[in-house]
Length: 474
Image (cartoon, rainbow, N blue to C red):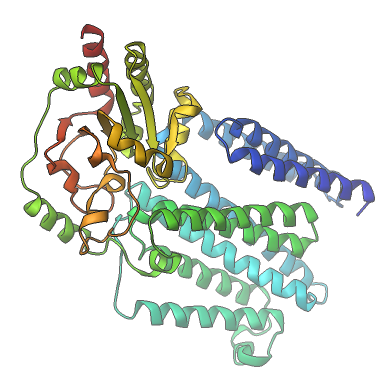
C-alpha cells in the first residue's frame, strides 16, 4: 500500500472522528453526518484506486443498485419506520462483513491457507457479522410487528444457546487449524471441503443471532438496535484486519466503540444492566401485567380539545413530552405549530426528551428537528425534571412507559427503578393517546388515573390540529 493511500485513510479517520464529535449535539449533527460521509467517500475511492481490482463492472453494478436503493429508501421511508430502517442497515453491515470474510477465506484456502491471526479474524468476522445480520432481522420484525414484541422464552433456553456457542467455536477452531484440538472430530465430517464448514459456521451463527434477540422484549429494542450497531462496527473492524484495510479497521472500531457507549448510556437511562436487557426476558408476561394493571388502575378523567386548549393558552409554562405516538401520527409539524401559537401568547414552551423515548436512540430529536423545533427548547431528562414542579401544563403525546410513576412508586412493577420524566409533578397533565392500551412494555400507566391528569383521546396529529385552532380562538 502506498504512503499516499495511508495518508488518505488517515484523513478519512479524522473526518470520522470529528463527524462523531459533531453528532453529539443537535446543532452540529447535520454537519457531522456530512463530514463523516465525506470521510467514507475518501476511504472507498482510495481503496478502489489503490487495490488490485480485477474488474470494475461488478463494482459499478453494485454501486448503481445500492445507491439507487438507498436513495429510494431515504426519500420514501417514513419517520415511524426509521427504527426498522436502522435495524436493517445494521444487519446489512453485518452481512457485508460475512461475505467479505468468507470470500477471503475461500481465496486463501485455494492458495495454501491463511495465517493463524488472519484465520482467527476471518472466523470472528463471520461469527459476529452473521449474529448481527440475523439478530437485526428479528429486531426489524419486532419493530414492524411481524414478530411478537413480547419476550419469547422456552425451556432450557440458556443451556441450548451455550451448547450452540460451543458448536460454533468448535467449527471455527477447525476452520482456523483443520483437524486440531476440539475440532478434530469434525475433520472426517467435512472431508476437507473448505466451503462446507464455512457454511455450517455461518448457519449456526445465524441461528444464534435469532435466538439471542427473540427473548428480548420490544420495549428494549432501542438498546438492542444500539448494541447491534456496535456489533456491525466490530465485525467491520475485524474484516479490516482480514483484508489489511486500515480505513475499515478505524471506521469499524469507531462504530463499535460509540455503539457500546450509547448502549451503556441507554441501560443507565433504564436503570438496568446490559445483562438484564439481554437475558432478563423483560416483557415475557406483558399481557398478564397489562391486564392486571388495567383492572387495578381505577378511573380516568377525559378532557375535550377546547378545554385542553384553554388550559394551555392561559398557562405560563408548557412542557411537551413526545413519544412514539407522535411518530406514528407524523404530528411533529402540528406540535410545532401549536408551540408557536403558545409562544405568541408569552407561554414558555419546552420539550422533554427521555433517552429511550421512541424506538431508537435519538428518535424524538430527529422528529422534532424535522419540524425545525429550536435546539435550545429540547431539554434532556436530568435537566427538565426539576422544571415540572414549576410547570403549569405537561402535554404528553403518545409517551407511556417513560412517564409512568410506577417506576418510582411500585416496587413490584417491571420498570421499578427506571428513571422517568416526572410529568406527574406538573400542575396539570394532558395525555394524548388513541386509547387506554398500555405502552410497548405492556404495563398499565398510573399517570392516567392521577387526579391532575386528563386524557385527550384520538389521533395525535388531528388532536394537535384541533388544539391549535382552539388556541387561536382563545
